[in-house]
Structure formats: C-alpha cells, structure tokens
Length: 82
Image 1 (cartoon, helix red, strand yellow):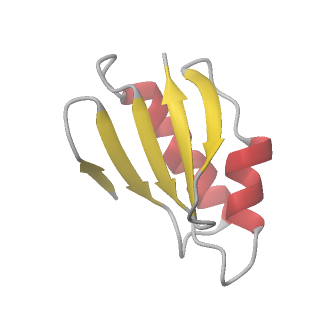
Image 2 (cartoon, rainbow, N blue to C red):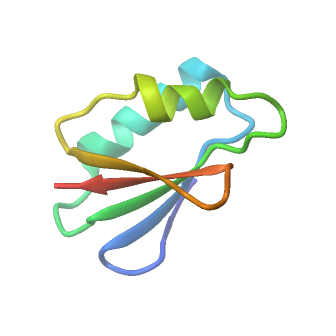
C-alpha cells in the first residue's frame, strides 16, 4: 500500500508480503512513481525476520534509487529517489 505524505514523500508498506511479491510491488511502484517524489519510506518490518529488510537494503536495484538510508526504526528503510 502506498500512502502519500506530501508531493515529495511517500510510505510504502510491504510487510506481510512474500519476498517475490514485495520485490515485484516495489519495482512496479518505482517504475510508475512521479518524478516529484524524492523520498520513499519502505515499511518492511523486522520482527518476523529479515527477508524483506535484506531485499530492500541489499537486493533491490532500480535506476530511480539514488541512495538507501537505514532508519532509526529497524522496520523502515528510506529510499532517496532521483
């Protein structure tokens, strides 16, 4: 689920998805996201394991991703977008 915080910030909730569902969802999101969005907080959770967290922080690649920032909350990774 994508929640727009402002025209430049969004939250994307992927926890409770499988690795494959989450990766497909994030790639579709990144392919379609407006160029004005500069920051996406990816809510992947961590208490049920680190599969989604690892996928976002280590395995997710896309031309729109400028940087990945670990949040103070272990269940969130922030993507800085072009």
